[in-house]
Length: 136
Ligand code: ZN
Image (tube, rainbow, N blue to C red; front, side, top):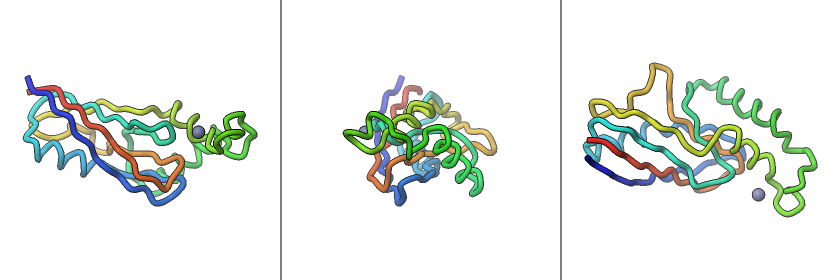
């Protein structure tokens, strides 16, 4: 049994952005010679989120627009009285902070069109993605 923790750092460039971090996760898995197990990817943030989905230019814009429609950044949320980012917290709750990725034969076992996506909701910022592996 093997247990390993790590972290990936991501610098986002915009207020809203979808960043594909699959390559960084693959590099971490390969560098540490992880073979078969499960990998928890987790962000310790309340205004960014993690998803697994397709990295396609139009879809990335759709994801941002969809979350804006749902969380209405311009609405007079109560949290905006102390910190003008209620929409970012609400979008985080919808999408979530974590994804579990199966690791098989030394690689993330993702579907053909699946990528690990960090969704920035209040950038630009420095973000951390924690990685916790349990497996062989
Ligand atoms: Zn806030």
